[in-house]
Image 1 (tube, rainbow, N blue to C red):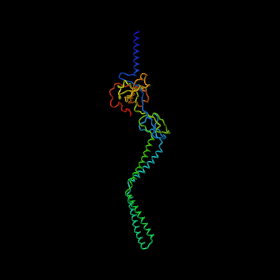
Image 2 (tube, helix red, strand yellow; image 1 turned 120 degrees about the vertical axis):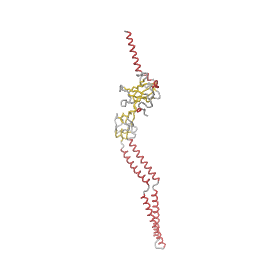
Image 3 (cartoon, rainbow, N blue to C red; image 1 turned 135 degrees about the vertical axis):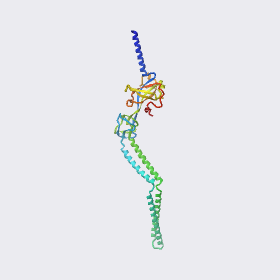
Image 4 (spheres, rainbow, N blue to C red; image 1 turned 135 degrees about the horizontal axis):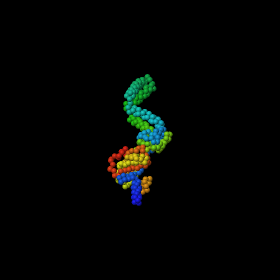
Length: 344
């Protein structure tokens, strides 16, 4: 009887010791490594690239958004009116540049030549009249004053002919190159001003940079926004990873790209496939929040285990258990699920 009792005690002690060792090692076997950590999700604080009063907000906390989706808008009425003015100035200057580049119209050249010919005829008529008046003065038929008046009229006609001649030459030559260049420069300035206003209008809209879920809605309609004030906090749905600490003794048995299995207490019995996406090049000591005191002093390497699935179920900070088969074959060039490759 005593032998049976002693045997039972020995068996119970052996089972207890085995259970203790199992729990102490986290359920590891000779070819399997179990690590504990927490789910990590990248979060982005979204802010306008301009200052102004918020006029509309399109999403609420918890909404799933797509890359490029409009999230909020500023009051940009003044910018819109300023853009209309800049576009009108640009259109007017474009016509000015076209006119200068085209040069004088054929009708303008013919008009200038006709005015030159008319001035030449007037000059010839003034010359003939002056010669007649001069002849009459020499014969004392008229006064010198009348001859001087004819001479002054001739000088005026000659000046008018010279001016008309130069005007015709200018019409034939067209605008100066400097005038064309100045008009083009003015047009470029107007176009730049309009482009700047379009950019300011675009900055008055806040779009999602990538797919994700609105975690926090910080500002509301009517609030003053600026680049320094976040409007939303966006939780990125990809990539999802679990941050664990790989013991130094197992470092050579777990290569980057190795397959892993992720489990959480929130979804018992459900496995999420994953893979080792990153192992820190520098060692550290296990954080004090992980395991017992003797484990804390172990030399470990921070490791990211990317999840191939679990969007909507794996959440920020959720405790997770990662199981890795040791001594796996060298991983392929592409990861098990390329869509969860580390973001650069």
